[in-house]
Length: 216
Ligand code: B1M
Image (cartoon, rainbow, N blue to C red; front, side, top):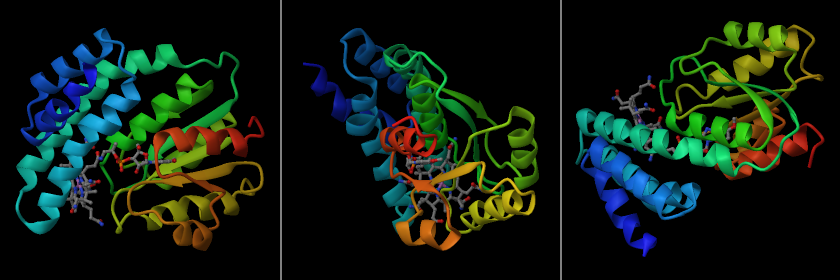
C-alpha cells in the first residue's frame, strides 16, 4: 500500500535524510501515488514537525536546514511527475514568481510555480530574496499578467506591499494582478495591502491564478 509510505516520508524530513526522502519520492512515483498527496500527507507533515520544534526551541537551525534540503530532494523527484500530470496545454497567462527580498524560503514558492506551469501558465521564477525592482523589471520585460509573491517571515511580508506600491507607481497596478501567499499571510493582510488574490496552498493558487487572468 502506497499510503504506508506517508509516515516514512515524514520521518525522512524529520531526520534531514535527503537520500531517504528522494528514494521515497521515487517509490511514490513508481507506485502511481499522486505527487501532491505524497507532499501534503507525507513530506510536509515532517517539515511542519521540524518547524514546530524549532519554534519551541526543541530543534535548531541545522535541523531546519537539513529538513529544508531533504524536502527539496523529494520535490525534485516529484516535480517531473507533477508536470506530466498537468492537463492544460494552452498558455493561460504569464506569471512572474518570486520569494520577496530578505526571504530565502523557496520550497512553497517552487511548488506553486510547478503547479502553475503544469496547469498551463508560463512561469518566470526569479528565485528567492528578490528585490522589488527586479520583479518590476521582469514584469515589464515579459509583459506579465500576474505577479506571484511568496513570503514566509512576518518580517518580509511587508515586501509584498512594496511590490504592489512599485507596480502602482509605474501605472501597472490595474493591468497586472498580484497574488500573494506563504504561511504567515492572512486574509486581513491581503485586504490591507490590496492584493488581488491569495491562496493557502499550491492547488488553491492555481484556481486563484486562473480566476485572476479570467481563465476560470
Ligand atoms: Co525558516 N522559518 N527560517 N527556514 N522555516 C519558518 C518559516 C518558521 C515559521 C519556523 C518557526 O519558527 N516555526 C519561522 C518564521 C517565523 C515568522 O516569521 N513568523 C522561520 C524562521 C524564523 C527562519 C529564520 C529566521 C531562522 C534563523 O535564521 N534564525 C531563517 C530566515 C532566513 C531568511 O529567509 N532570511 C530561516 C531559514 C530557513 C531555512 C533556510 C533553514 C529553511 C528553508 C530552506 C529552503 O526553502 N530552501 C527553513 C524552513 C525549511 C522552514 C520551515 C520549517 C518550513 C518551510 C517550508 O518549506 N514549508 C518553516 C516552518 C513551517 O512553515 N512549518 C520555517 C513547506 C512548504 C511546502 O510550505 O512554504 O508554507 P510553505 O508553502 C505553502 C503555502 O504557504 C503556500 O503554498 C505552499 C504549498 O502548499 N504558498 C503560496 C507559499 N507561497 C505561496 C505563494 C502563493 C500562493 C501560495 O502565491 C504567489
